[in-house]
Image (cartoon, rainbow, N blue to C red; front, side):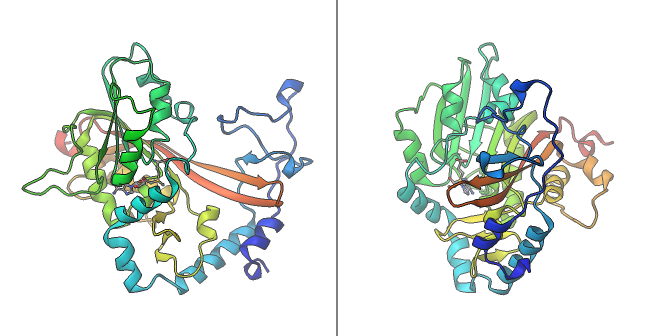
Length: 360
Ligand SMILES: C[S@@+](CC[C@H](N)C(=O)[O-])C[C@H]1O[C@@H](n2cnc3c(N)ncnc32)[C@H](O)[C@@H]1O
């Protein structure tokens, strides 16, 4: 029975689904060797040796693994984080990220070199003739997205604001030899901040309606669901009408979720890691509803029972241009482990004139 296995055993034993062979007639396309930063073209086909490559694209978990995952979620719910620890981890999350960066400096996350391929708008704003463009990266960490972007930039008029609420992460970015103040400014900012009478909630140097593109790479998962609506409100205010949000984050069912142990469960799909940082795993439909139905007045309106509410969708302040699941099987050839990973990617555009404002 799947549920009786350990995570170590199931990742050794999984039998990933294989699709029928469909190799091309052109032998140069049959090698399955892809550009390491290009996703999406290495299919696991019948007859393939699963250990031939480190990763396979578009692999859905098999049924036995899905049953195992459900069993894991039951065990996680049965042994949640204590009330004392809930307060400890939710009260000052930036403190745990500070500790994280003190322990890991700038070498934990890999440079996100695939960004321009996955999000073509980043290629457009960094072109020589793109003109004045403002990009905001939220949760920029040690700069693993910001620095590759600046390295590839040819636009004299590009300004990238790289913000993080960990003071230590911002220090790492500012002290990096790649930090180029002509095109980049790193600042401390909490995306879930709420405006007060004394202080607005927007980042230093950025006015309402001034940003062309906002990059959210593995940041939303670090927020508690109660913080999402304030975060979206700030992002909405910052974007120009027609401005775009680029999103990539963890998907529900990712092995990182399935392997969560006892005393890590904060609430459904939301956990605290061993180092005190928090992580949420998104369902694609939930993610779509978060962004397509959010309004400044109504906030987030997620109802997973009700997926076909086109009226609510049309009134949202963002248009969901795309949401996709990047499901991959990652293989460790030495330990013979097969890991199902799942990340969600999305593009959301600020609606130019919401229907409500039109009086429509
Ligand atoms: C998983 S890391 C991702 C870092 C970076 N985007 C990358 O992909 O390499 C999440 C980052 O979000 C930051 N973060 C978490 N909550 C935040 C908040 N409320 N406001 C701003 N940054 C936040 C953390 O400090 C951390 O640097």
